[in-house]
Image (tube, rainbow, N blue to C red; front, top):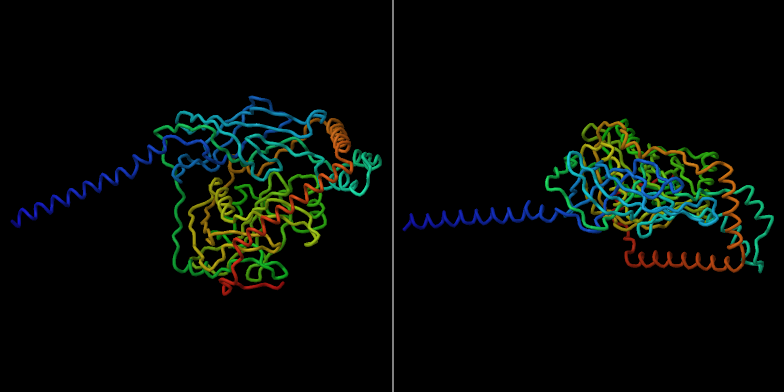
Length: 505
């Protein structure tokens, strides 16, 4: 009886093992592969362009080339490696020309294949959803350019000037002045090499069955000493007047040379110091809607110290840029220098009377900015390992020095760097090519046509009243959204104040 009982127990054990093996097999690779043999419509991924594209020179059918900056995912797992070539073509284009027919340009680009090395091309049908840092906007896959006369000086002189009067036609003296001495943004669309665009699949895309696995970045081993050191970091930076400013959300592990080489390879630039020349450049870029890739950044302090490095990336627009302030930490628990960083994405710029100067609006989503910085450094080949430290005492909703909201999960992204150099693809993010459509005479004539056309249509009290009403409603809607969000997610009171070390410089 004992032998029979033992035999039954052994059989039951083997049966359990067999059933467990079947369950594991069913839940593992076959199901995942079956689910990932096709990317569904709407799948998003990022592409970095490698060629200059302009609405002035592009034609329908022109080839558009780039590479995967952030690959499409299936079940939250990347299915393709970064830097795989992607090809598209121009579907339609309307240039401004002399401005007789169009005031703004438009450009539509479709992507039709991904070229994994050693495999058959992956046929796709995808369109652009977002252009990072751009002056232009995208609607239904079509890039719409700016109107050159829609500038601060144009609004004031051509619309608001006529609001108190009943004149239906523009002042000829003012019109003559703007014709001869204008600050005139370029209306044609120009996408520089290194422009990052988010792409969405219009139709599903079949994946080849023999795709190699995607190599992942190693996880960072965190010693107890390292964790303790980083958890002591103040979560906020401060302005000269002691106001809470940005959020410390990243830490880099590596030498100063590794840090500088990594951001240089990723296409980031050190910011200029504040001077009369740089302030004047700032003002011109604001009026002309041009990029200022090394624009000055305001001073912020951590533990009473000014940042050691201020880096930014703004290839297309003065108003939109990514920037990061970096401080070297005194504590070196593992013998390797540590650098605390506050990374923020700026989404717009304006002149503020309240703050007596230029201010930038910021993106609420700080975690997205963490991903952007990490993405650029990974593509440049400068990241050795990545980890994350949760900070339960950090508030998830905060306000910066200009009273704008920040939202974060409170984590501190820790990135260990490795020596790297710029290559032809990674460094394309930092290159710009001069693009001036047509000759000087052509641009002068276009300027006159667009200026006269805008003033004859908009420089009157009727359009001025319409424009002022539109702007007022837009501002009111923005304030309503901000107040609603603040009520829904009120800023938590002094959680984690023991970590703060203020600076009153």
